[in-house]
Length: 299
Length: 305
Image 1 (cartoon, each protein chain N blue to C red):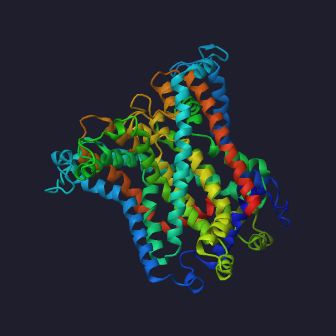
Image 2 (cartoon, chains in turn red, brown):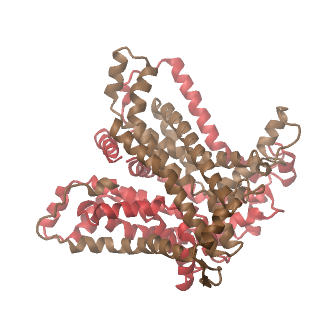
Image 3 (cartoon, helix red, strand yellow):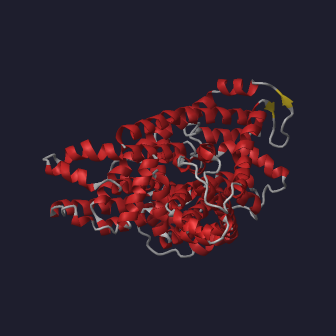
């Protein structure tokens, strides 16, 4: 596993970004017919992965009777579904909670994971045992931690609070962040740090002023992924909060869509509202995301 | 991960101490003790007690909770369904994702657009994934029923999520929509990392593209594919959100997987003692199923890498 990761990283370093590498120079251009088949295939892939999102957008502007009659295109755009959705679900409140928990937990995750990963990679702190301990705490299903954490938070009076949920998300995401950051720290040339030590900066000073700026892309990638993981998380949020004042968007929408009399158009509008922040984040940071995901996970 | 510690122990030159790195690691270790070790111990203690959500530890009852769980058809069924979901879904996503990654490999500009846009399903909150698919699969007015009806394939609308036959495949469909992009991205990265020369050499030596794929490309990416499959397998056992939002475990118990049954025992019936015993058994099952895949991955690494 590790050797493969090393090869991938090696290639990335020598060849630059994989997609931008001019492979055409090496690989003969496929014949025209093969290329058009490929284009057809890629188009089909895109349609499959985008149509549920587009369908959601379509339903969000359909009048309720037309949803039920099953016609694809609405006869008129029922824009009122959008303001109605904000009236029937406390979307802004849920959104605020979700964003607060995501930002708080991602900051805490990075605060724990960045120094720890640095020490584990550079100084071999904790040895093989610590590394596999970090990994195994990711492999265990979250449901294992659910009940004990419920009682722990209740004891600490953090149950049904945003800081409590943020704390749980932060700890849950630490292994992911370590995993993502690992390859970035490992890619640093040791000589730079040694020069910094010689210059008299301590280990902490070197970490802060030399290492952190150099692995900034990795920190951004890990931070975004932790933000999204927390924002999307459902099981802990469902069990560890129970008032609207502390519920996150996934919980709010899950409870709303459980109502029998729910209006489909409003439900679609509410869901799209909840999806918009992650989509903006994903598209804006796509380069970091793809690099972070692929460098962290295939090793 | 394990490689991070395999490098030779080497301390930096003067001015570096062993104490500082330990302090850098300490907060994370404390956090993980609270998140991973404490829960496991607490769970084991809970599982031998009679405990309610409001009032834990009412009595010590030994292994009674485990005996109940192992005699409970609903719970055992939920374990079977977890395995019956995780294994095929992982395999299907792996095959589809690898196929798309191969497709992407030959197209530079189109490939970049596709790799950006397939981030969207991957990043969608699972609950919203469920909402989208619930609307598509809905018996009255859902897109799929409209299409099937127009094509004359069905006479009256099918309630996919309410049918014993279709409920689980529907959840699998939503799951595959969300997670196949993950496999695509990682498989694509693995393919990009292959040395181009061997493949070219085989083609020049007269091997057909088909032979070159089976004989060279596939064995070389096999360890990466198995590693990706392992990640997906672990995640597939965590399935909860889609079941909660799409079927609530129904119809009957047809889509009640292990996580959902544990949730129900703990938070609908408040029987935390039984739920803990169930959780321990579920965790054992997950380890038991994933272990052979770990062994397979290590074997593939030795054999091909």
